Length: 309
Ligand SMILES: Nc1ncnc2c1ncn2[C@@H]1O[C@H](COP(=O)(O)OP(=O)(O)OP(=O)(O)O)[C@@H](O)[C@H]1O
Image 1 (cartoon, rainbow, N blue to C red):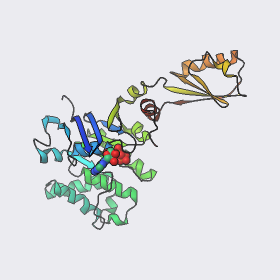
Image 2 (cartoon, rainbow, N blue to C red):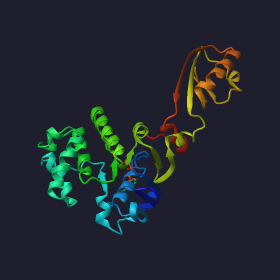
Image 3 (cartoon, rainbow, N blue to C red):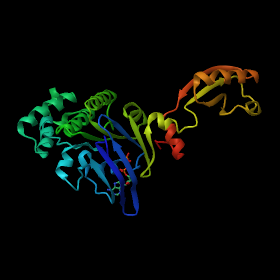
Image 4 (cartoon, rainbow, N blue to C red):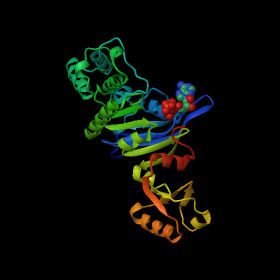
Protein backbone atom coordinates (compact mmCIF):
# COMPACT_ATOMS: atom_id res chain seq x y z
CA UNK A 1 0.00 0.00 0.00
CA UNK A 2 1.82 3.12 -1.21
CA UNK A 3 -0.29 6.12 -2.15
CA UNK A 4 -3.62 4.40 -1.65
CA UNK A 5 -6.08 5.65 0.95
CA UNK A 6 -8.02 2.40 0.81
CA UNK A 7 -7.15 -1.12 -0.27
CA UNK A 8 -9.69 -3.96 -0.25
CA UNK A 9 -8.44 -7.50 -0.80
CA UNK A 10 -10.38 -10.67 -1.44
CA UNK A 11 -13.74 -9.45 -0.16
CA UNK A 12 -16.32 -12.22 -0.11
CA UNK A 13 -19.87 -12.44 1.19
CA UNK A 14 -22.49 -15.19 0.91
CA UNK A 15 -26.11 -15.08 1.97
CA UNK A 16 -27.03 -18.71 2.52
CA UNK A 17 -26.27 -20.61 -0.65
CA UNK A 18 -26.00 -17.42 -2.75
CA UNK A 19 -22.59 -15.79 -2.95
CA UNK A 20 -23.27 -12.07 -3.41
CA UNK A 21 -19.59 -11.13 -3.70
CA UNK A 22 -16.91 -13.64 -4.65
CA UNK A 23 -13.44 -12.08 -4.58
CA UNK A 24 -13.35 -8.34 -4.89
CA UNK A 25 -10.11 -6.36 -4.85
CA UNK A 26 -10.15 -2.56 -4.97
CA UNK A 27 -7.66 0.23 -4.42
CA UNK A 28 -8.31 3.92 -4.16
CA UNK A 29 -6.03 6.96 -4.21
CA UNK A 30 -6.70 10.50 -2.92
CA UNK A 31 -8.57 12.73 -5.37
CA UNK A 32 -9.79 9.74 -7.32
CA UNK A 33 -13.29 8.57 -8.21
CA UNK A 34 -13.58 4.82 -8.58
CA UNK A 35 -16.76 3.82 -10.37
CA UNK A 36 -18.28 0.51 -9.35
CA UNK A 37 -20.39 -0.36 -12.37
CA UNK A 38 -22.70 -3.34 -12.67
CA UNK A 39 -26.32 -4.36 -13.20
CA UNK A 40 -28.92 -4.85 -10.46
CA UNK A 41 -27.85 -7.53 -8.02
CA UNK A 42 -24.19 -7.50 -9.17
CA UNK A 43 -22.94 -7.12 -5.60
CA UNK A 44 -22.17 -3.38 -5.52
CA UNK A 45 -24.10 -2.54 -2.33
CA UNK A 46 -22.74 -5.63 -0.59
CA UNK A 47 -19.20 -4.52 -1.48
CA UNK A 48 -19.84 -0.99 -0.22
CA UNK A 49 -21.43 -2.43 2.94
CA UNK A 50 -18.30 -4.48 3.65
CA UNK A 51 -16.04 -1.47 3.09
CA UNK A 52 -17.95 0.79 5.45
CA UNK A 53 -18.35 -1.86 8.14
CA UNK A 54 -22.11 -2.39 7.89
CA UNK A 55 -21.74 -5.87 6.42
CA UNK A 56 -19.31 -8.37 7.91
CA UNK A 57 -17.34 -10.09 5.13
CA UNK A 58 -16.86 -13.87 5.12
CA UNK A 59 -13.33 -13.28 3.90
CA UNK A 60 -11.07 -10.42 2.92
CA UNK A 61 -9.70 -7.24 4.41
CA UNK A 62 -10.06 -3.50 3.98
CA UNK A 63 -7.20 -1.26 5.06
CA UNK A 64 -7.01 2.54 5.11
CA UNK A 65 -3.82 4.60 4.83
CA UNK A 66 -1.56 4.05 7.79
CA UNK A 67 -2.71 0.45 8.04
CA UNK A 68 -5.92 1.24 9.93
CA UNK A 69 -8.60 -1.43 9.66
CA UNK A 70 -11.93 -2.11 11.35
CA UNK A 71 -10.18 -4.77 13.40
CA UNK A 72 -7.33 -2.50 14.51
CA UNK A 73 -9.34 0.67 15.28
CA UNK A 74 -13.06 0.56 14.50
CA UNK A 75 -13.91 4.13 15.61
CA UNK A 76 -10.85 5.60 13.88
CA UNK A 77 -11.67 3.68 10.71
CA UNK A 78 -15.31 4.82 10.63
CA UNK A 79 -14.35 8.45 11.23
CA UNK A 80 -12.41 8.38 7.97
CA UNK A 81 -15.30 7.00 5.89
CA UNK A 82 -18.58 8.62 4.85
CA UNK A 83 -21.46 6.58 3.45
CA UNK A 84 -24.25 7.86 1.23
CA UNK A 85 -26.61 4.89 1.35
CA UNK A 86 -28.78 3.80 -1.55
CA UNK A 87 -31.94 4.14 0.55
CA UNK A 88 -32.34 7.66 1.90
CA UNK A 89 -31.74 7.60 5.66
CA UNK A 90 -33.12 10.79 7.22
CA UNK A 91 -35.31 11.80 10.12
CA UNK A 92 -38.23 13.18 8.13
CA UNK A 93 -39.69 15.25 10.97
CA UNK A 94 -36.46 16.86 12.20
CA UNK A 95 -35.17 20.03 10.52
CA UNK A 96 -32.52 19.46 7.84
CA UNK A 97 -29.83 21.07 9.95
CA UNK A 98 -30.61 18.82 12.92
CA UNK A 99 -30.36 15.77 10.68
CA UNK A 100 -26.86 16.79 9.66
CA UNK A 101 -25.85 17.61 13.24
CA UNK A 102 -27.14 14.28 14.51
CA UNK A 103 -24.77 12.43 12.20
CA UNK A 104 -21.92 14.64 13.38
CA UNK A 105 -22.78 13.96 17.02
CA UNK A 106 -22.52 10.23 16.28
CA UNK A 107 -18.87 10.85 15.37
CA UNK A 108 -18.31 12.76 18.60
CA UNK A 109 -17.66 16.11 16.91
CA UNK A 110 -17.22 19.07 19.25
CA UNK A 111 -20.21 21.51 19.21
CA UNK A 112 -18.27 24.43 17.67
CA UNK A 113 -16.83 22.38 14.84
CA UNK A 114 -20.18 20.68 14.33
CA UNK A 115 -21.98 24.01 13.85
CA UNK A 116 -19.34 25.24 11.42
CA UNK A 117 -19.33 22.02 9.43
CA UNK A 118 -23.14 21.89 9.33
CA UNK A 119 -23.15 25.35 7.70
CA UNK A 120 -20.46 24.23 5.25
CA UNK A 121 -22.07 20.99 4.14
CA UNK A 122 -25.57 22.48 3.86
CA UNK A 123 -24.12 25.26 1.70
CA UNK A 124 -22.23 22.73 -0.36
CA UNK A 125 -25.37 20.80 -1.28
CA UNK A 126 -27.35 24.02 -1.84
CA UNK A 127 -29.68 23.67 1.13
CA UNK A 128 -28.60 26.60 3.36
CA UNK A 129 -31.91 28.37 2.89
CA UNK A 130 -33.88 25.20 3.75
CA UNK A 131 -31.84 24.31 6.85
CA UNK A 132 -34.80 24.84 9.18
CA UNK A 133 -37.27 22.88 7.06
CA UNK A 134 -38.08 19.22 7.54
CA UNK A 135 -37.11 16.63 4.92
CA UNK A 136 -40.79 15.60 4.81
CA UNK A 137 -41.35 18.84 2.87
CA UNK A 138 -38.43 18.24 0.45
CA UNK A 139 -38.39 16.95 -3.12
CA UNK A 140 -36.64 13.63 -3.81
CA UNK A 141 -33.59 15.44 -5.16
CA UNK A 142 -33.34 17.67 -2.06
CA UNK A 143 -33.54 14.62 0.21
CA UNK A 144 -30.73 13.01 -1.75
CA UNK A 145 -28.62 16.15 -1.34
CA UNK A 146 -29.29 16.22 2.40
CA UNK A 147 -28.35 12.54 2.57
CA UNK A 148 -25.00 13.49 1.03
CA UNK A 149 -24.53 16.37 3.49
CA UNK A 150 -25.04 13.92 6.39
CA UNK A 151 -22.28 11.67 5.02
CA UNK A 152 -19.85 14.61 4.75
CA UNK A 153 -20.37 16.22 8.16
CA UNK A 154 -17.30 14.61 9.76
CA UNK A 155 -15.12 15.50 6.76
CA UNK A 156 -14.20 11.91 5.81
CA UNK A 157 -11.32 11.22 3.43
CA UNK A 158 -13.11 8.31 1.72
CA UNK A 159 -16.72 8.74 0.58
CA UNK A 160 -18.83 5.79 -0.51
CA UNK A 161 -21.82 6.69 -2.66
CA UNK A 162 -24.30 3.92 -3.36
CA UNK A 163 -26.38 5.00 -6.37
CA UNK A 164 -26.76 8.54 -5.01
CA UNK A 165 -28.77 9.80 -7.96
CA UNK A 166 -31.50 7.14 -7.88
CA UNK A 167 -34.83 8.84 -8.54
CA UNK A 168 -33.53 12.41 -8.77
CA UNK A 169 -34.43 15.01 -11.38
CA UNK A 170 -31.74 16.14 -13.87
CA UNK A 171 -31.20 19.46 -12.04
CA UNK A 172 -30.43 17.78 -8.72
CA UNK A 173 -28.35 15.18 -10.49
CA UNK A 174 -26.15 17.92 -11.98
CA UNK A 175 -25.92 19.61 -8.57
CA UNK A 176 -24.80 16.29 -7.04
CA UNK A 177 -22.20 15.80 -9.77
CA UNK A 178 -20.86 19.32 -9.13
CA UNK A 179 -20.56 18.44 -5.41
CA UNK A 180 -18.70 15.24 -6.18
CA UNK A 181 -16.33 17.00 -8.55
CA UNK A 182 -15.60 19.58 -5.82
CA UNK A 183 -14.89 16.79 -3.31
CA UNK A 184 -12.56 15.12 -5.76
CA UNK A 185 -10.75 18.42 -6.39
CA UNK A 186 -10.35 18.75 -2.61
CA UNK A 187 -8.47 15.44 -2.59
CA UNK A 188 -11.22 13.17 -1.31
CA UNK A 189 -11.38 9.61 -2.57
CA UNK A 190 -14.77 8.46 -3.82
CA UNK A 191 -16.31 5.10 -4.60
CA UNK A 192 -19.38 5.60 -6.73
CA UNK A 193 -21.69 2.69 -7.45
CA UNK A 194 -24.06 2.93 -10.35
CA UNK A 195 -25.71 0.95 -13.08
CA UNK A 196 -25.79 4.05 -15.28
CA UNK A 197 -22.80 3.89 -17.56
CA UNK A 198 -23.22 7.60 -18.41
CA UNK A 199 -22.56 8.46 -14.75
CA UNK A 200 -19.50 6.23 -14.56
CA UNK A 201 -18.20 7.72 -17.82
CA UNK A 202 -18.69 11.28 -16.57
CA UNK A 203 -17.27 10.90 -13.08
CA UNK A 204 -14.94 7.97 -12.75
CA UNK A 205 -11.17 8.06 -13.16
CA UNK A 206 -11.08 4.31 -12.94
CA UNK A 207 -13.89 1.81 -13.20
CA UNK A 208 -14.40 -1.61 -11.69
CA UNK A 209 -16.95 -3.57 -13.68
CA UNK A 210 -18.71 -6.08 -11.46
CA UNK A 211 -21.10 -8.85 -12.46
CA UNK A 212 -22.53 -11.70 -10.41
CA UNK A 213 -20.27 -10.68 -7.52
CA UNK A 214 -17.08 -10.88 -9.54
CA UNK A 215 -14.81 -8.18 -10.94
CA UNK A 216 -14.91 -8.70 -14.70
CA UNK A 217 -12.68 -5.74 -15.59
CA UNK A 218 -10.86 -2.87 -13.91
CA UNK A 219 -9.06 0.12 -15.29
CA UNK A 220 -9.29 3.59 -16.72
CA UNK A 221 -11.97 4.17 -19.34
CA UNK A 222 -9.30 4.06 -22.05
CA UNK A 223 -8.10 0.71 -20.73
CA UNK A 224 -11.64 -0.67 -20.69
CA UNK A 225 -12.38 0.56 -24.21
CA UNK A 226 -9.14 -1.07 -25.34
CA UNK A 227 -10.73 -4.43 -24.46
CA UNK A 228 -13.16 -3.95 -27.33
CA UNK A 229 -12.30 -5.15 -30.81
CA UNK A 230 -13.12 -1.66 -32.11
CA UNK A 231 -13.35 1.70 -30.39
CA UNK A 232 -15.88 3.21 -32.79
CA UNK A 233 -18.72 2.18 -35.05
CA UNK A 234 -19.46 3.72 -38.45
CA UNK A 235 -23.09 3.65 -39.56
CA UNK A 236 -23.44 3.82 -43.33
CA UNK A 237 -26.88 4.43 -44.86
CA UNK A 238 -27.01 2.78 -48.26
CA UNK A 239 -29.39 2.72 -51.21
CA UNK A 240 -31.18 -0.61 -51.50
CA UNK A 241 -30.06 -3.87 -50.00
CA UNK A 242 -26.79 -5.06 -51.51
CA UNK A 243 -25.98 -8.70 -52.02
CA UNK A 244 -24.11 -9.90 -48.95
CA UNK A 245 -21.55 -11.43 -51.29
CA UNK A 246 -20.60 -7.86 -52.25
CA UNK A 247 -19.77 -7.14 -48.63
CA UNK A 248 -17.59 -10.21 -48.23
CA UNK A 249 -13.99 -9.17 -47.97
CA UNK A 250 -14.81 -6.02 -45.99
CA UNK A 251 -13.60 -6.91 -42.51
CA UNK A 252 -15.70 -5.75 -39.57
CA UNK A 253 -18.63 -4.71 -41.80
CA UNK A 254 -22.10 -6.15 -41.28
CA UNK A 255 -25.43 -5.30 -42.84
CA UNK A 256 -28.40 -4.34 -40.70
CA UNK A 257 -31.31 -3.79 -43.11
CA UNK A 258 -30.48 -0.76 -45.25
CA UNK A 259 -27.57 0.15 -43.07
CA UNK A 260 -24.06 -1.09 -42.72
CA UNK A 261 -22.24 -1.15 -39.43
CA UNK A 262 -18.48 -1.10 -39.50
CA UNK A 263 -16.34 -1.55 -36.41
CA UNK A 264 -13.30 0.66 -36.75
CA UNK A 265 -10.36 1.63 -34.60
CA UNK A 266 -10.21 5.22 -35.79
CA UNK A 267 -12.94 6.98 -37.80
CA UNK A 268 -10.56 9.54 -39.31
CA UNK A 269 -8.26 6.84 -40.62
CA UNK A 270 -10.75 4.14 -41.59
CA UNK A 271 -13.80 5.96 -43.02
CA UNK A 272 -12.13 6.97 -46.33
CA UNK A 273 -10.91 3.49 -47.29
CA UNK A 274 -14.29 2.00 -46.36
CA UNK A 275 -16.19 4.49 -48.55
CA UNK A 276 -13.76 3.83 -51.39
CA UNK A 277 -14.28 0.08 -51.04
CA UNK A 278 -18.06 0.53 -51.10
CA UNK A 279 -17.82 2.74 -54.23
CA UNK A 280 -15.69 0.06 -55.95
CA UNK A 281 -18.49 -2.44 -55.31
CA UNK A 282 -21.09 -0.05 -56.71
CA UNK A 283 -22.79 0.47 -53.36
CA UNK A 284 -24.27 3.98 -53.18
CA UNK A 285 -23.87 5.72 -49.82
CA UNK A 286 -26.67 8.02 -48.64
CA UNK A 287 -25.43 8.94 -45.22
CA UNK A 288 -22.64 8.38 -42.79
CA UNK A 289 -22.45 8.76 -39.02
CA UNK A 290 -20.21 7.46 -36.30
CA UNK A 291 -20.63 6.56 -32.65
CA UNK A 292 -17.91 5.89 -30.15
CA UNK A 293 -18.02 2.78 -28.03
CA UNK A 294 -19.57 3.10 -24.57
CA UNK A 295 -19.12 1.26 -21.30
CA UNK A 296 -22.35 -0.53 -22.24
CA UNK A 297 -20.47 -2.03 -25.20
CA UNK A 298 -17.64 -3.03 -22.86
CA UNK A 299 -20.06 -4.75 -20.48
CA UNK A 300 -21.81 -6.51 -23.36
CA UNK A 301 -18.48 -7.63 -24.76
CA UNK A 302 -17.28 -9.01 -21.41
CA UNK A 303 -20.51 -10.65 -20.19
CA UNK A 304 -22.69 -11.14 -23.26
CA UNK A 305 -25.47 -9.22 -21.51
CA UNK A 306 -26.72 -5.64 -21.32
CA UNK A 307 -26.10 -3.53 -18.21
CA UNK A 308 -29.79 -2.73 -17.95
CA UNK A 309 -31.93 -5.80 -18.36
N1 LIG B 1 -29.31 -9.12 3.24
C1 LIG B 1 -29.36 -9.96 2.22
N2 LIG B 1 -29.86 -11.20 2.33
C2 LIG B 1 -29.88 -12.05 1.29
N3 LIG B 1 -29.42 -11.77 0.06
C3 LIG B 1 -28.90 -10.54 -0.13
C4 LIG B 1 -28.84 -9.57 0.92
N4 LIG B 1 -28.27 -8.44 0.43
C5 LIG B 1 -27.99 -8.70 -0.87
N5 LIG B 1 -28.37 -9.95 -1.19
C6 LIG B 1 -28.20 -10.59 -2.52
O1 LIG B 1 -26.87 -10.39 -2.94
C7 LIG B 1 -26.81 -10.10 -4.33
C8 LIG B 1 -26.09 -8.79 -4.53
O2 LIG B 1 -26.92 -7.72 -4.05
P1 LIG B 1 -26.42 -6.22 -3.97
O3 LIG B 1 -27.50 -5.43 -3.30
O4 LIG B 1 -25.07 -6.16 -3.40
O5 LIG B 1 -26.34 -5.85 -5.51
P2 LIG B 1 -26.23 -4.43 -6.21
O6 LIG B 1 -25.21 -4.58 -7.29
O7 LIG B 1 -26.01 -3.36 -5.22
O8 LIG B 1 -27.65 -4.28 -6.89
P3 LIG B 1 -28.60 -2.98 -7.03
O9 LIG B 1 -28.02 -2.16 -8.14
O10 LIG B 1 -29.91 -3.59 -7.42
O11 LIG B 1 -28.62 -2.30 -5.72
C9 LIG B 1 -28.24 -10.13 -4.84
O12 LIG B 1 -28.46 -11.40 -5.39
C10 LIG B 1 -29.05 -9.92 -3.59
O13 LIG B 1 -30.30 -10.56 -3.70
